[in-house]
Amino acid sequence: MQLSLILPPEPDERWDLAKQLGVTTAVVHPLEIGDGTRFWDFDTLQKLTNWFEGAGLEVGVIEGSVPLTETTKLGLPGRDDEIETFQQFLRNCGELGIPVVCYDWFVGVRWARTSAHVPSRGGSLTTEFDAERMQGGPPVRASGVTREELWENLEYFLERVVPVAEEAGVKLGLHPDDPPREEIRGIPRIVTSVEAYDRVLDVVDSEYNGVTFCQGNFAAMGVDVPAAIRHFGDRINFVHFRDVEGDADRFVETWHDDGPTDMLAAMRAYRVVGFDGPIRPDHVPTMAGESNSNPGYETLGRLFAIGYMKGLLEQTES
Image 1 (tube, rainbow, N blue to C red):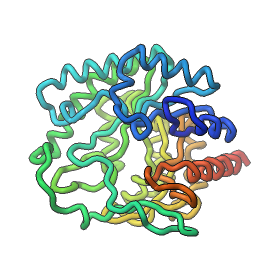
Image 2 (tube, rainbow, N blue to C red):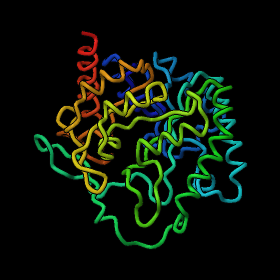
Image 3 (cartoon, helix red, strand yellow):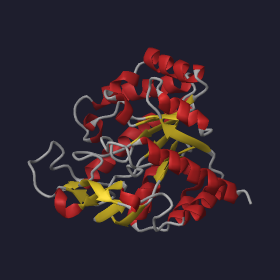
Image 4 (cartoon, rainbow, N blue to C red):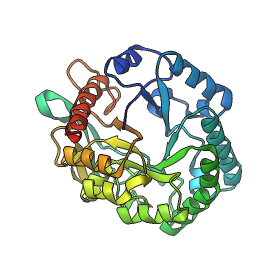
């Protein structure tokens, strides 16, 4: 497994911290880059990879910052042009040796949390989702889309991009809807269960059409996380290592070593299925001295999580 961290596209102390931890695989994420379109062209991607490689790091995943919008997800005019742009993006990633692209099928409401100041161990802060607090508000553009339309649009997308991903040697990892509820504010969500992923993987039966296994979302689905890992096996292309307490209607993020999931059993399951891709800590607590301006993604909790993950990995070798 490739222990990974979200790192900014330009050097700062986090690049050094990662290497001091023994982590050399970077995940490029929109929380660190602002305008996601900056990575869509070859020249900018090449500059990015050259800069990381010059510092002894490699870009293992482009996550979220991809040329994919609601134009394609809702099947609006212009989706074929956007899909063509995505196809070229995959070719660019392949030529530059970027092995994984993580994308999602959220529409209307994206990553949803209702609180970012939930007290946790020692006064640290975590995030929470509460469905009751997500009610109301004006209609959004996705209002009125049906569940089957979202499925049809996802299938249309996969049938056109997975063959290109295969040719480029770039593995796709679909992230679950977060939170994995059937709907949010009346807008349906479809990537919310193991069975939904089985349908996704059957659209194009290829290792390049795979799963971003976000453990917190699968925990919120109420499934046995290690069993789900074994179920998907080599179709897991990227892992978000995290945990939650609660269910899809209401949950809080936990410390990696203090949630209900057996994290050692999860790590052992990745070993059993032969997962050798990037795995990163996700949604960490905000610790003392941090501003909580980027809830779930401050630095100290990620450093703790990497140490914990290293310990778990050592246990799986015994």
